Length: 558
Image 1 (cartoon, helix red, strand yellow):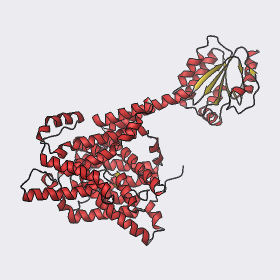
Image 2 (image 1 turned 180 degrees about the horizontal axis):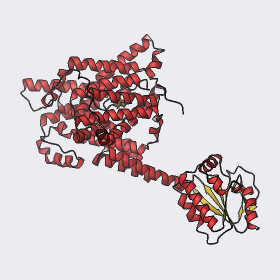
Image 3 (image 1 turned 180 degrees about the vertical axis):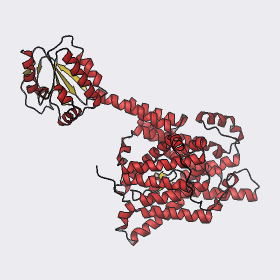
Image 4 (image 1 turned 90 degrees about the vertical axis):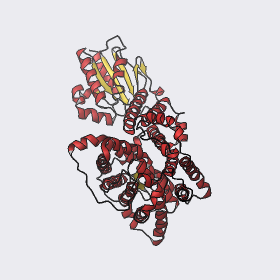
């Protein structure tokens, strides 16, 4: 395996950079920066932190991901997928715990990239990805019901089911003006693409609803519409860099949420980069992208930020507006920084119900309900993984959902693989003409009396090791020789070797000789490395069935 070479896409693109490319990147970066503003504020508040921390994350992490990442057009920042995780970590470990967990996650991401594990993410089953993404979407929607409708609830429970119980009990406290703002925001965002795809609906909704709420308050005396300023003290000052106190006990306590952040960040960023590749006809460097994501998540918490990853919606906005190099992502971060320093105080007038409407649309887009519906038509094993991951994400949390989902997916995969491996016993004669994949020329071969021939067709691993013993024990007669044909065994694992070793030991006690036939080169190397060849005897490992039967006759004729 070649060593990791740190070479961000930005370095490569600057070698052929032109004025025309910069003009396109500049326009895309400005537009994406404006688009990212309301999302950064909404994601920050929904995650349980202040709105400015959402923007700081978009600035610091967005800059780092474009500077050090492996994709030309990836736009990074806070995303909806992290809302549930961040909120849960803050509730359990506090904001300091979140900062440390994010730094640890960043280190994990860097290590994943350095050790060339960027491609391993593609082995996570699709039903798991859809299951937890849809589950997160439902959870995000659930967290926004209170603000969307202006419900009078002092403390909303963290548990999903308890949340809805409380909501139903308090539906009589709906604040009409807030509910109107929230529902109208959803309508504006949903309909805006029919008018213009250039200007994001979330920005249009925030501008209209903020102005409307301000006018209603100033001229109509309506003060019941809660705004960001009613809940948070808005500051437009850059925070000082602060390194949290990290010790071994803290690391052990936060290792699980850190792994969850890292896994989700890796999945979402690489999925986003892959989607972008398909649009622009490029190919991202997955390992470099993970390193860039890792650096971003190490830097972001040092300035009080939250976890970040590649954002598909903002990345597509970048592409659609002409962005083609990481320079556009850097400009987007600079635009956000300028807005933060110059216009942040105006954010205090944004209605909370409007932000809730923005997140309702985000959750709808995340849900992928059409994909979810199509997957329900797939084999039962995939449906099982999908539903379990979805329900665990909604009812418990993402960490449990990913862990259990992966375990179930692995078990079902092993069962499928074991079902593809067949073990047959040949009793009379071998007819190679009936075996289309045979590579050796063989005539009809009679099996001598006292010889049993078994054929293993498929991988010989721990999933089917016991199956071979069961087939072998079905014969009540005790032979003098057992021939095991392995020409169709592509690989063998340690359990298979252990099984064969036990079989040989048991057969030797009963004075039965074991001969292997047609062992493939990969399997032969594994057996030789394990010492099995020496134990069995090299003359008992034959290249084809003719040789194996000839060797067997020597023992039968004695």
